Amino acid sequence: MKWTDQPEGVLLQRSFIFGITGIVLGTLSIFNTNFQFLEAPMGPLNGVAILLQMIGLSLAVLVLRKRKVLKENLEKAKVMTMILSVALLFFILSI
Image (cartoon, rainbow, N blue to C red; front, side, top):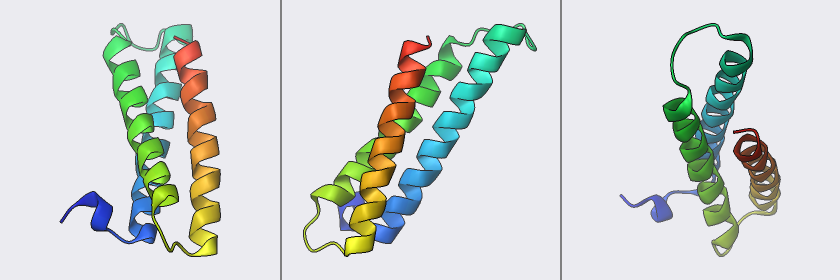
């Protein structure tokens, strides 16, 4: 089954999971860069974090572009898009 055929609730849930995972990985990368907990390169972790945030953002935009979406799902998608875009911008500028 294609992702575009999924109901809005499932897409928003997956968007949240991808987004929060990307934010947590990006935060761990920033903390490790500043406090040196592990002696490991953080470039791949930054890349995975940004990729997960972009996937979450694209799923939220996919809900916004669907037709006949419930009003509450539309509002959730707008908030999710705003939060993930700000987080993505923050992590890109912090690299």
